[in-house]
Image 1 (cartoon, rainbow, N blue to C red):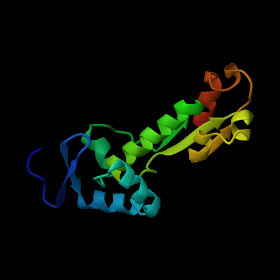
Image 2: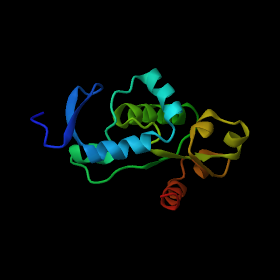
Image 3: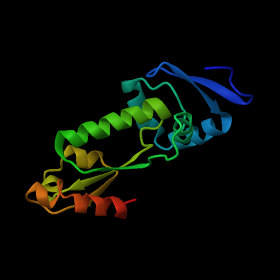
Image 4: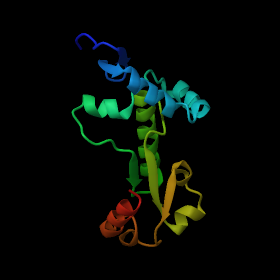
Length: 152
């Protein structure tokens, strides 16, 4: 990158080996958000080696985006859902310094709820869906779109 604008701080994101200009205002917003679960995030950061406090809005602007994703619907169960949540939380922490930057909404059948599935424990919000064949829940596109609209 070039010279940083006046009033900006220079941060390096080790995961991408790129430099980003982050305004002091962006850093303050990000540090306020990151302080909400600081002890849990500190432990998570020690495990994954977080190195930055850039906020999502600045990251999206830098990548010429126009919409910040704050909520993610997981329309799957089991290990696929667990891996998705773990990966995205790791990315959020290493990129934004806040592992909870994205709110996870997970669909869950009565069978998943009864088994106390790991992905349900990891979710921020759980939406019960009918049990049985995947045609009634995780593969039901109409239901997934309805849940996405309702939990927006």
